[in-house]
Image (cartoon, rainbow, N blue to C red; front, side):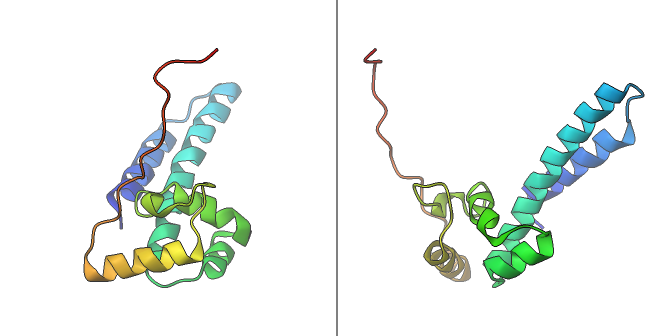
Amino acid sequence: MSDKKNASIDQARQLLADIPSEALAVVERLGEVRELLDAALNEAMAEATLGGASIRSVAVRAGLSPNSVPPRLARTSQLSSYSEPDGKVSGSSIERARYDSEIGRPPPKAPLTFKPRRSTS
């Protein structure tokens, strides 16, 4: 299990241990827990994908549509550096990540992007 996934699950447990009594506060707390569990789910899906599972099988097990998995994988610590400019992880990117993982090569660094020095407006 990845550290980020475990940290998200532990934080969610802590938040669930003390549920407020006010209804609106409960909604807010459960929203925070959902975000943490989504992050943990994304990390778990990345682990499964790197382990050889297909995007389709990961989506079925997670109860998601297959089209929603690549953007989630692109936000994970393990696959974010393999994401495409459109914010998704492609099949070829996953194959590259699997290969890099097998030979012990670190993930590539994020590409440099243009940032203007001053605003033009």
